Length: 128
Length: 292
Image (cartoon, rainbow over all chains, first blue to last red; front, side, top):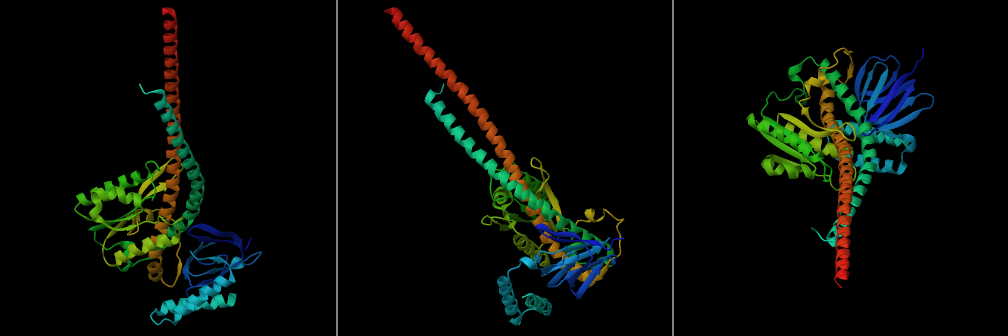
């Protein structure tokens, strides 16, 4: 029996990825989460972070937000912000980090926003 | 009887019109392919989004405290109609079809004694609607200067709608757009987005898998529903864009053919009158020669 399941990453304008894989780690709202075959049905959110698709060759995507559904051995990731890490431009990342840091410095934002932004900065710094 | 010169001019002008319509058809065909691709690739996202919401809705037990975006305000007084049309004309019945459907609905809403509010997206729809229903239009969007509509624009419109909703400005929201079926057929549609349409939710009851939620259902729904509004609007945008190009292509194809027919007819006319005048001249010459 194969230990693979299907992972799909879909953005509003196109389907980014659809393939069989062994394991996927997602940055869910309440912490990193590893998903393998026969996981129980699940619906959750994403916070900014890295989606790791571990199969024959590992793929990484940076996301800012999104929704995840797992059912019938299909992992569905709906996001409007997924970027393939191998094709991402480092300079543009620096710009994003700077913007996010500026927003964090602003006192008016809510705790939730600050939480999300801090994750964004953290993950992006690791990437660089 | 128009003179030969007039006919010649007419033929020339029809031919140049034909050239324009032909060029427009080509452009529309090229754009259509892209728009169609976009629309088809955009479908899974909105569909899956609907599915997730469907699953969430099923697992909510406490219907009374459910988010208002899902179950509605409980009232049925004010309707918000969002009419999505194109910014350009010359695309056959595309804009008129949407407006016709929208106007029928407006009439029904007003006849029932309900309040009506209209948001228009795209300038052509506004032109048609403002004549009769101008005073109900509360907001207009045009993305004329944008080359391609992205998710951002949909979020802009969606944000506005949610803003209005949270200010209790309306109870129900209906979206009007053209659904792209194929190049020749586009179906104008009215889709209710607030509260989420229960008819579509009631469909597949079999698939009642119990989900694990993280965080809990309410929180997910609260975040998801506004996103769903933008997603549905974006889907409508994409369908509309494809429909517009398809509609334009068929319209321009027809126009080109009509122009061709007209040219043929005019040419026959032209040749006939040319022959007639030659014959007349011949008769004149012959009878002139005879009288000598």
